[in-house]
Amino acid sequence: VAEPSRHVDAVLARVARRSKDLLDFAAELVATPSPNPPGDERAVADVITRRARDLGLEPPEALADRPERPNLVFRLRGGAPGPSLMLTGHTDTKPVGPDARWTSDPLTPTIRDGRLYGLGSTDMKGAVAAMLFAFAALQPEAAHLSGDLLLVLTADEEMGSRFGAHYLADERLVRADAALVGEPCGITHEWEAIDVVGRGVTAFRVIVRGTQMHSSCSDILPSVNASVKLAEVLAGLESSLHLDHRPHPLCPQGITVNAGVTLGGGVTYGVYPGYACFGVDVRTLPGMSRARVARDLDSWLEGLRERDPRLQVDWEFAAPPIDWIEPTEIAADHPLVVATAAAAQRVLGRTPPLGAFPGATDATPLQHKLGIPCIAAFGPGLLPLAHGPDEYVPVESVVQAAGIYALTAMGYLGEKPSP
Ligand SMILES: [Zn+2]
Image (cartoon, rainbow, N blue to C red):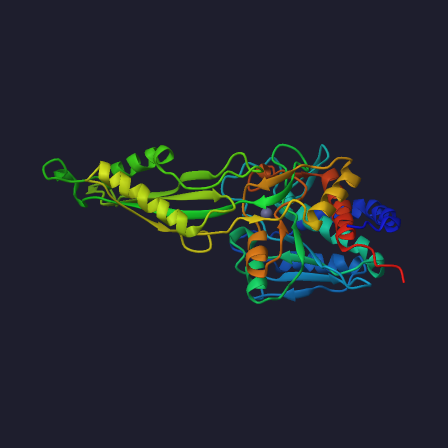
């Protein structure tokens, strides 16, 4: 990867000169609600389009399966052919939620102690703002680059990306040779890792059946209480369920099994419960398959039934897309990973180690439907702060992100060969 070094300083200077505007823009994005559900990214797309115009950019292409779910695509054509790069982030957020304990209003961006507080600040409006400013800083250098840069700002990531990255992939509306997703890559500190692995998800329901009857007679007649049986299965799940997987060197915690993320059963007082169920979500690793998980769940329940003949238990996958979200991985020596590491070294003065993003991202549809190798997450902020009260992103990290994204693109696209 050749770094067009004589242009790097100009780009970094442009980013630095606009850092106040960048933060204003990040705050403006936070102040423009895009909670999902219900899901409507029109207002936030308008704010981005307006800012792009102020930055002297061509208007983006708006691609939408439904008018209220726009995806924005900005394109920068290099002066020579070469591999193309996609920078991508989502414009929606989770809802604030009931009884959310925010110190300040979640939709009123507030800067305290060098941190921008507000809903979506770290997940991931700070990164989206940084990507647009990186793109704008590169525009005057386009003629010197080999290959094209795409900035893809997606809808609907927080609810499975059906109207976002899956739509773009299914309709073949974007293509690139590599992609970087700007999700927050910190768990305990900023810029913790370049996440070359993105864990996947599988989710399923366990259903227990019993004897529904008049509850006054439950000790007179033979009967099975579905809720009590469910409690036994749920409490024993951690020790009894084995899901086959290979350990991954970049993901020491392995897979994560969350039992009882949903829970239901019974009818009402007076009715002996004949039905109960709970949901499980599992964060998966590369190498696992839906079919193998299904076999493991079959044999798990087979074992439980053998030990307890009165137990009537079954399982089923959750409704798509959460039934199976494929994990992703990009090679550690992929040119995009090399370019990202070099850009981080230049801007941060250190190279973050390679790592694994614990959750699922838009990398899944991009990698598995379009064949684009993806860095699952490299962005400002801390993932544990997302989806909770007092979400923030450090102001400094947003500015660093703009520099890192611009230099990553320059490094990956490379300098146009001199005539
Ligand atoms: Zn996100």
